[in-house]
Amino acid sequence: MSDPLFERIALIGIGLIGSSIAHNVRAHGLARHIAITTRRQETLTQAETLGLGDSYHLEAAEAVRGADLVILCVPVGICGAITREIADHLEPGAIVSDVGSVKGAVIEQMRPHLPEHVDFVPAHPLAGTEHSGPASGFVELFQNRWCILTPLPETSPEAVERLKAFWEACGSNVETMTSEHHDLVLAIVSHVPHLIAYNIVGTAADLETVTESEVVKFSASGFRDFTRIAASDPTMWRDVFLTNRDAVLEMLTRFSEDLASLQRAIRWGDGDTLFNLFTRTREIRRNVIEAGQDTAKPNFGREPVKGDKPS
Amino acid sequence: MSDPLFERIALIGIGLIGSSIAHNVRAHGLARHIAITTRRQETLTQAETLGLGDSYHLEAAEAVRGADLVILCVPVGICGAITREIADHLEPGAIVSDVGSVKGAVIEQMRPHLPEHVDFVPAHPLAGTEHSGPASGFVELFQNRWCILTPLPETSPEAVERLKAFWEACGSNVETMTSEHHDLVLAIVSHVPHLIAYNIVGTAADLETVTESEVVKFSASGFRDFTRIAASDPTMWRDVFLTNRDAVLEMLTRFSEDLASLQRAIRWGDGDTLFNLFTRTREIRRNVIEAGQDTAKPNFGREPVKGDKPS
Image (cartoon, rainbow over all chains, first blue to last red; front, side, top):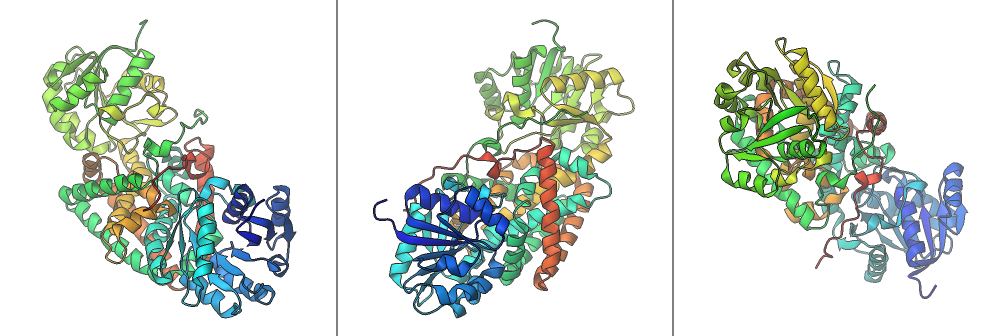
């Protein structure tokens, strides 16, 4: 391996994102050594069986020793506790980063515990699937996806550049913004969409007049798309909503106002309001495809599903 | 062609569903003659260029003459007007059907105009993509999807059986229920999901603090899934909401109640409520996959999208 970006990378947490990073480090030779740490022995053993790293540790403190890049790949809610645990063991000059979907709360939790001799570069790769755990990662996950960095005033520009190079080597496009703006943008493009997907699936499951098996059977008419998002990791998403509370509540209020106005249009038979919105939203889909953020194939290019014939 | 199910099938309207039916009739030899009719010369020419039928008519009355199966494949809102137009030209013994997403309103519009010497079998194939028009149809569209029939008390059982055989030949699973129950089920599995997808895309587009280009750029974090559904045909969906008003308003009220309760949980930091719902919804995703109604592949098995690198 010639000239890797880092000597030793410590991955704290080895779920979908952590394991996808490990695949990338390996595939692109981004570090000489991958140290993996996670709290549960079972998960650690799974990571070892999958051969994701070079060393495996139950103690995060051990994994970060000697690491010049440390990435927390854990639910947002435990970033603070982990930072406290590793703080005294971080190497001078190390870059400490994370992959959390909320940046303000992560900074608030981590920053007070970090020693001055490390560089903290909060990061958020905008990529994922509805699967979780060490076996769900794959090397292409970050390909042509965005990674947002939200450096702090005290973060050195060199550290930002090094982490940018790292994410670009993983296939990402990198953008830098403030944590406040990040949290606002993500509330609308990610957090509220997840919340309403979870919500509609819950509403459907609770009906007395329509059975759950009917909901499942007839889901290809729209509902199934929402069940995918609503299958995302419960712990991760609970923490997202608890820690990006203000931005989520603000966007949710707007969503509900707009929905009430559509409800009124339906009640009063105002077809023009509906038609105008439905035409406008079609245009945004075109922009998403042009921006290379989704496939133009119908139904996401899903293969026809071979299920059982009904009995 | 030996022993086709029908002699002449008239397809009134040749969008996504009409053209997909035409592909099936051709592929499986379900009729000797496919007569296609649509109001706009441009669309009719497109259908002819694509070779979807055997004869092409601007007048629906001409297409239905001699047809033993007539299927209206048009937005729900114009079913009544078309039925008035064709009523006097229908063959005795013909089966008249439709593909509308709402059944109560279609029956209300069509039934009064139909002569007693035809059999009316309202139908709804639960299949579609976000694309529309004669070029968007394909033969696999109905494969392993459900088609719901809502026959009336006066419909002959033989006609129901013949139409059932037709949809099964197109690859569908067929179920029979009342139009009232259909409209309730579809409100929750299809209509409200579409409405909230349209709504979130509209809310996002209207923000002052987040630009539309940011919404598009960062859409892979959840939002892009909703843009697909929100790219569905505006006329068709306007008509769905106007004609299934009561069931949609009922389901929408439940959705909003549930969302308000989630909003409250977020405001008060009630993580358990969130976690419990998110765990429950994951289970429903598993059921959808087991029922063969969606792919188990992550992200719907989308291919990685090759977009432009940002400038």
